Length: 404
Ligand SMILES: *Cc1c(COP(=O)(O)O)cnc(C)c1O
Image (cartoon, rainbow, N blue to C red; front, side):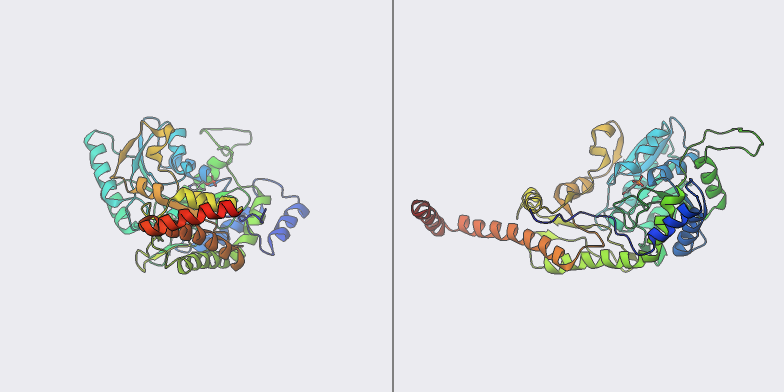
């Protein structure tokens, strides 16, 4: 068996162990401490635009706290991008609220501003004005934040930006996650940088971030004894994990560069293949970290299953695009506004190995395997198109089987 090529594996730099060892040496083995503060400062400096950051135990926890802070309660409705990982939507249900899913638009694969506005108008008409909007920067591609923020402001609905996949991406030169009222990041093992498990809540509103830290550490009131006026959570990041994060922050620009390199590599190497497409550059204001490199396969040319099987046979990891939430069994009763763009993307898309630690050799292995599928299809197609060669092919096959 050939060596495994992973979809997106952790990629440690030089300094992570030092920060972790420091945590051990000083016995800061707790969900707070100097590495947590340090990581928050590093992130604030990286994101710019005077945002505050609370380091948390996961991106999912960050979305949950964002909803709590924005006052989402049982019976409320929250708008959410349909094409995403389930963790964007699950916290809506933790709060007893209902998701309203919005389709993607073609250029960024993210929330369609058009259907967002239609959904808001419809829900207002039914006396159910949405309490928040969760927009996602899928695979690192920034959503159309100009349009989305304008709509959200017009209807006075707060925006949560799920930038779990998009640390290092910018829109009009500004870090994604800093446009909405609250942004969230993830440092799960498969993300662009990792703390093994972790996340962060971002906001320009210092009060929100203070509240996040308070709620994430069991909502303890100022009192000599344990006193609680709010329901709290155990969502703070561990100081050991934050040590990994501090090391990772030092190499983040390299990691972004490598992911973008992967995308360009695949795009160039498969440029001549009819039936394989890459997401087109939506414009110079969109700068994607290309967390995952994805392809769209034209089913008239060849099947996505064939490519998937061929890669798996060669011990190469790959994965379909996120299955839209409105098509998930668990959300089958949820409202959806759209016209099938996300469903079409899901049916024709594939994520290729995209780790920042991939070598050119490994990238070439992926490309040649895909090319084999494409060539087999092409030659069998040519044969099928040509009755004479079809007969010849059959004859040769029979002869070969006799000889062998
Ligand atoms: C990974 C991810 C999350 C959840 O982050 P965790 O840290 O794994 O909880 C949320 N949204 C999106 C889009 C993600 O990719």
